Length: 188
Image 1 (cartoon, helix red, strand yellow):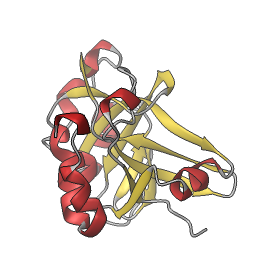
Image 2 (spheres, helix red, strand yellow):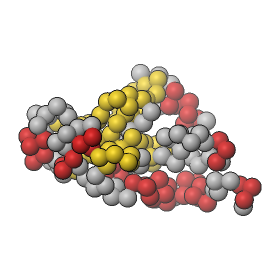
Image 3 (spheres, helix red, strand yellow):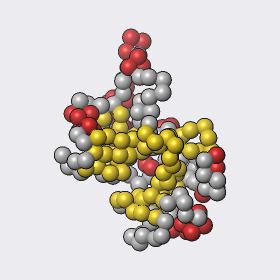
Image 4 (tube, one colour):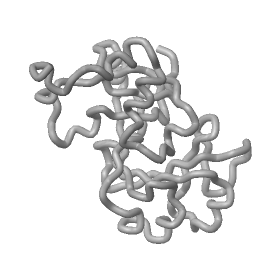
């Protein structure tokens, strides 16, 4: 399979009874940060938490992109934080690591004043999503995800609660049509 790094996984809608209350992947948009034959990992872009960033990372709150909440990046490693940044230009700077195109990670141990002049947007995630070798490919074959090209603004959407719908609409075809799928088909 081709390398999917930098693409979006968009959850295929499911019936309400198929979804656990704490299912972070229900109607989620996941940005794949790395994909290889060893596995994949990414972050859920549209799960803001009801917590400020300063609750876990003092000194970063004033620097995050609106909405200025901590986000749940996935079910794995919820006790760790990941700083996703928009990096204009082509240079790498101390405390920043470019992943693909204009997207990178910030070293959250670096002083914010050192790295902030080099970035255009910042979002902090608790946890991440991860798949073992072949696991994501199986989920794609089984029809659990739509693959959609990412746009620069997706990772820093000002309205993350609408991102799933926006990305599916933009994708067109079957993905866009899936927006009409009701939570409970019996109520249709």
